[in-house]
Structures are given as C-alpha cells and as structure tokens.
Amino acid sequence: MSLQSLPVGDGPPPDATHLVGVDEAGFETAMAGQRARSEWKGTGDEAVEELHRQIANELGEVRFLGYDSTTAKAPVRALVVNGQRADRARKGDRVEKAGF
Image 1 (tube, rainbow, N blue to C red):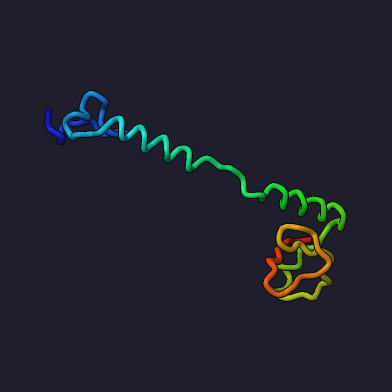
Image 2 (spheres, rainbow, N blue to C red; image 1 turned 120 degrees about the vertical axis):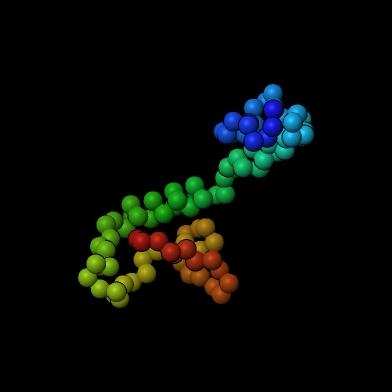
C-alpha cells in the first residue's frame, strides 16, 4: 500500500500508521496533554458577569442611543474597577466598560 492510496479522513487508519512511522504512544501522550491544556478552568469572568448583572438590575433599563447619534452625554452611574464595584478609579486601575 502506498501513501497515495490511503483513504482521506481524520488521519491515517490505525492499521496504516506503520507505513508513515507514527509514534502512537507519543501521539496519545501529546493529545492527552493538549486536552488538559485546552480545558476551560475559569478566569473569574463569571463573577464579573454576575456583578454586571447585579448592577444592571439595580440601575434599571438603559436606553441605547447609538442608532440616532454617534455621541451622547451620560452620567457615570457605576464603576467596576479591577473586577470589583468601586466608587472611584485611580491611575493604573483596570476600569471595565459595560452598558449600564
């Protein structure tokens, strides 16, 4: 069997791997490592999203003006700084944008 006659799919069939010198054990080890690295472990984003929901519920409905104008003036009604609700932000703080 030549490489040209191998069927096309998700990879070579297991019985043809010896034709191309595939290290099956090494491949499985590498794939297991990749699967472990790709698992979502959380970043704390859920807590921030919950905080945004709490603030939105507290402040009520916000009217979107973007269809009528590209600029508008509005008061700052809430701040999320470094992932937590705050009264003020300082230089270097990470202030999050949200449509409150």
